[in-house]
Length: 156
Picture 1 (spheres, rainbow, N blue to C red):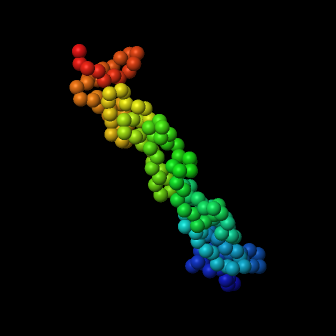
Picture 2: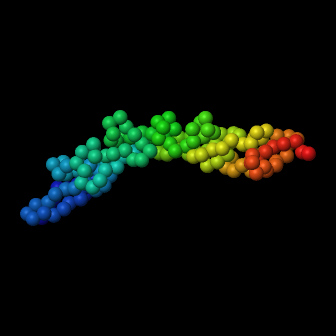
Picture 3: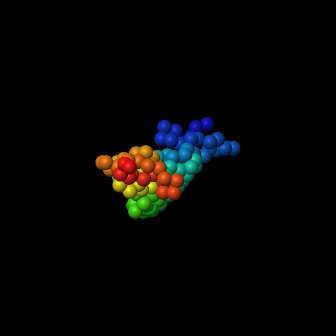
């Protein structure tokens, strides 16, 4: 027999005894009555066989006031949803489309998720990842003390 599912518009036809049912694949929504599937709005997806746009949940890193598409980029740095170190601890959060990146501010070093200050009398550029990136100020030399760690001191 024939069916009225609009296969080219995303619908899949499932044969049932004596009839058929139109279903929508993941990322689409629609009802058997419309026999047409519509793609979820931007930056949202749905499970298979979703009947309404409300089933189109925002992708990770995106948000909307309604909770479903269309969805806009979520600024994790502003919303507090990032895992970056706090700004007061040397952390720098940069929002990217759908995600974020973490780094350390000037004069700090680390992963961006955790940052440590450079030793006194030294400096490092933004994005430094290790203590060796901290350079002692002019005229000072690097010394390691078992009690105090790395120090920048006048040469003896």
